[in-house]
Each structure stands twice: as C-alpha cells, then as structure tokens.
Amino acid sequence: MVLLTLLLSVLVLCVVYLVNKISKINRKWSDLGVPHPPPVFLFGNLLDVVLKRRTLAETLRDIYNDFPNEPIVGYYHFLSPRIIVRDLDLVERILIKDFVHFVDRAPPVDIKNNPLVVNLFALCGNTWRAVRAKFSPMFTTGKLRHMFPQVGSVADELMKILDKKTDSVDIKAEGSKFAIDVIGSCAFGFEPGAMDEEDNEFKIEAKAAFAPTLIDFARLSLVFAFPGIARMFGLQFSKPRTIKYFTNVVRSALVHRQQSKEVRKDFVQQMVTLLEKGSIDVEKEDPSDGYLNIGDKSIEGDEKLELTEDVMVGQAFVFLLAGFEAASTTIAFMCMELAANPAAQERARAEVVKAAENELTYDSVKDMQFLDGCLKETLRIHPPVGTLGRMCVKEYNIPGTNVTVRPGEFVMVASTGIHGDPNIYPDPARFNPDRWVNDSRRPCAYLPFGDGPRICIGMRFAIMEIKCCLAKILLKYKIQLNPSTTIPVKINPHSFFGSPLKPILLNFEKLAA
Image (cartoon, rainbow, N blue to C red; front, side, top):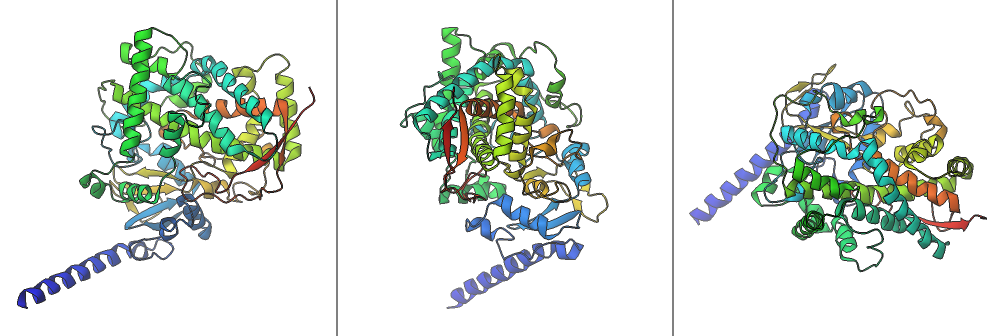
C-alpha cells in the first residue's frame, strides 16, 4: 500500500511538472509581447493539421492573415514556439542577407542509414554547401538545353494520351504520368515511355512515397517536431520500403550506364561523370545561371566531400520529390486557370503558335513571356510548397523586435500568405498574368522556389518541364472546364505539395489542324 501510494505520488508530481513545463512553453510569446493565436495544450496551433482539416501551409497562411500589421507573429508548432516573419525586409534578411544565421532547413539527418536524405533539401551546413557546389553545374543553361528534346518527347507521349481522352480528363493524373516519365527518364535512366503501364513498379513506388498514411503522418510529425526523440527510436523521413527501392534503382542505373558505356545527356550521365571525375564541366557561362552560385554567404570553413553512390541516390530522390508531385500539381492548376480564363489562354496560345512556326526549342520556350506570366501566376496562387522554414545555427536578434532566435529554433515564412497579400498583390485572388510584365516587385515577395542560397536548385528544370508541357497542349487543344469541376479547389490535407483533394476534370477540344 505504501509502495502504491509512493508510485502514485511520483506519477502526480511528474504530471504536474510536465503541465507546468508545457504551460511555461505556451507562455513564451505572451511574456515577450509577441502577437500570436492562442495555443491548444500539447498541439500548439497545429490541431487542425493533426486532424487533417487543413495543411500546414493553410494554417500558417491564416495566422499570417490574422495579424495584418505585424512584422512578426508567433505560433506554437506543437511544443516548439516559432516565429512567422511577415515583413518582407525581415524575410529577405532571414533568407538572404543574414543567411549565415539560418543555413539549415532542419536538424542534421541520419546520412549513414538513409541514402535518400543525402540531398540538397535535407543536408546541413558545410555538407550541404559541398554537395550544392558539386551539383550546381547539372542545372546550367547548357545542360538544360541538352535535356529539352528528352522532355519534349515525353510531352508528345502525353498528347497521344489526351487524343484518346478528350472529355472529363483528370489532368492531375495525366500530368503525373508526364512528370514521372520525365524524371524516370532524366534522373533514373529509364527509356521514355517505359512507365506507360499502370502496374509499373517505379510508378507504384513513386506514388507510394508521396501518399502518406496516418502512420506515416505520425512518423513525419515526430521527425520534424521532435527530431531528437525520432532519432532515439530510429525513425526516418522516408519509409524503409522507399529507401530500399530507390537506393537499388539508382545504383542499378549507375552501374548499367558505367558498364554499358552508353552516353546520354541526362542527370544519370552527369552523376556518372561526378563519380568518375569528381566534377562536371560547364560548357559556357550564361547570365541566367547566376542563381546557382551561392557565393560566400553560407558558412565559414569548408568540407571535403566524398562523392559516393549514396550521394547520387539522395540527389536522384530529391529530383523525384520536386519533379513528380510538385510539377504535376502545377501542370494541373495551370491548365485549370487557363480553362477558367479563356482570354489568357488565347494569348498564351498565340504566343506558342508564333514560336512554333519554326520549332519548339529550349530557347523558344524559355522566351515565351506571357506563358511565363501564366506559370508565375499559377505558382503564386497555388504554390506547391506554401511554407519555408529555416533553422537558426547562430544566435540572431530579429531587427526591430525584442526576439532573440537561438540555435536550433525555427523561423517560418508563410509563402502562401505573402502570395495572397493584397498589399503586395492587388486583387490577389484574380488570375492576372499581366502583373508579371516589367515586374518590379520587392525581393522575397514571390517564393514558390524559396530564395537565397537555398533556393531550389532545380527551379529552371521544373519551369522548362512545365512550360514545355503546356506549350504542347496549347498547340493541339482548347482547354475547357468540365461542369463537375468547382473553383476554388480544396487542397488535400494529406498532400506534401498542395495537391487537389478531388480530381480536376477538364475537357480538351482538339483544334483544327
């Protein structure tokens, strides 16, 4: 009886201690006078995210909108107090000017047991910088120009599919076939068209990697919110099945290319070159390649990087991460917006038709300014990644505030909130490609690919891929809304990249030859 009483007393004391500890955490922003929404015990401001009512991007957007005159806003990421930076000057400081304080996106990852995280999205510090320097030449203008015919061939295959299904086309599903074939061909070494069959293993595994179950969501929540606890239990960002499959695929592709001596102008070939020579040659400098140079704003010191197959596996997987789900989602929303705005569609088509009088090339597609404006508007309204997070690595006092961010703490940027801010974009809900003509918007007002040294390295490949696909579609079809499609589209709370909850159904009317 005495022992039971003692155990109960200890339990009560532990509960009281934890409650007081959590209550103290939840008072941080009140104590500092930082405006913030009230937190829910244990869940902070993410209860709707946990219950799958809204995505994290939608939650942070709403917090951004609720405090329109504040430079910063606090919120609670479960038990982690975080800052949302609203003022664009502060956003620019976090992402660019004071980058030395915010080099990393997340805590260090387990690169020994999970090759998929040895990539530019997840790596930290000098390791990230070393990998970035090695892989930047893959995305220069010359390399993209070489890969354009490959992307165009895959787009031609998509046109054959649309020829057979002109009404009630699930454009996200068809765009996914295009995107996965592009990435499978360019980054994993498959022949174009190799994934036409629905039971193709690569296609099945790729879809599974981006279709998280409730258990996957719980695992990811632990990895992001409590990385220390996740490491204790051996929890990884990726599922063991995903790690094993894609590791084997990339290694097999590299071995095949090395042994067969086959030479193709794709990412696989460049990875083989990196393994064999340690660097990739840049054929010719181009002014538009400037974003690939991170300069000396990153971090002090250097790191000698051993280029192994694991490094190649990680990069190939991040190509899939960005080039499959994000690209297909953007293609779907861009087609939907052009269908809903027929005048913009006709202007885009006229531009494409004029450019195609000779031949669709990398340069002709790149120079399609109105189509580019249509893509920018799509990415503004429907950014695949609606939030940006930066982890502090060096103590930082946020200018103009009394808030000090310490190493290990996070600062967030609500991209979706910025993109929909009427003070930055007048009439923000309106699809208006002309707003990008001679655009002189402030830095960090447009963030679909991030900004600063950690901007998405594959940004121009994604733009090329999407514009090529849309140019081919506009040459052959008039895109129309299907009566069953309702705008605005609700976002799937299970999606990593802002995918639609329900299919976006469109009709494709063949144009006269």
